[in-house]
Image 1 (tube, helix red, strand yellow):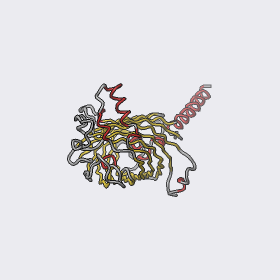
Image 2: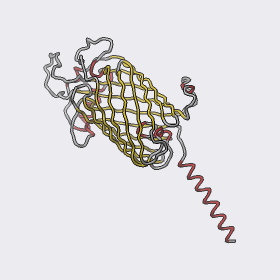
Image 3: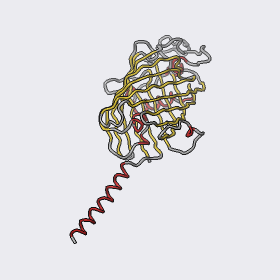
Image 4: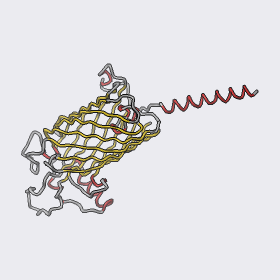
Length: 324
């Protein structure tokens, strides 16, 4: 009798462990995320300039077929798609300088006001040691983006700060489009506590023309790079608890930046800069956690020489993802 009871306990335990293992390795088909960027999120400073805010809602999903994109790269081991709706605002550092109603000169501004509202469609292809993303962006830059209204509402209702009348000098309305590609390569495969990776991203269109190589590391407990929440790949993650710090250092070579230079095809745009810094450095440091269906992250971005030579800027990003 004791033997039968013992075998029964072992059998039930095995079933429980099997179910637990299945839950831990479960993959998901959809993921939604909300993110916000703001230089006001940086604890040691109180600034509201350059890239001053961003907010986005993203949806990742797995589908067998979409625009025949699933047929590319026969050696891939997985793939998924994504869309995002995003709003961003850019302001000069001396935006509080008084401007007479009839004044047209913006010589006091180190960069113009600019707002962009856009949507994206992208696909990520996963390989054994790397992943490759390619995407398309389209939207509008100018007053139609409603960036001025969002910043005004935020200052009126959340922070109680001043509203900047300099938005009337922002880059005028224009249609924006971009193609983006990024590849990331994992140098230490199957490591769970320390990892080194490299990546290169390039963008081409009338919003940005640039290329950005970088190298980074992760320390903590994490999965494969192609499952990483810090790269928006957590739709492929399982339910295991993950926590890690991630840092990157890289540079960008810039050919054009519409948020500072206006219209790529008409360089007579008022308030736009004629020349910008064509290279800058960017450092990132963040913490990321993932458990079951939820991933969260908070990271800081430091740029030096972006748009304006020899000038530095900090901003931070918070993001939450829910997969199902």
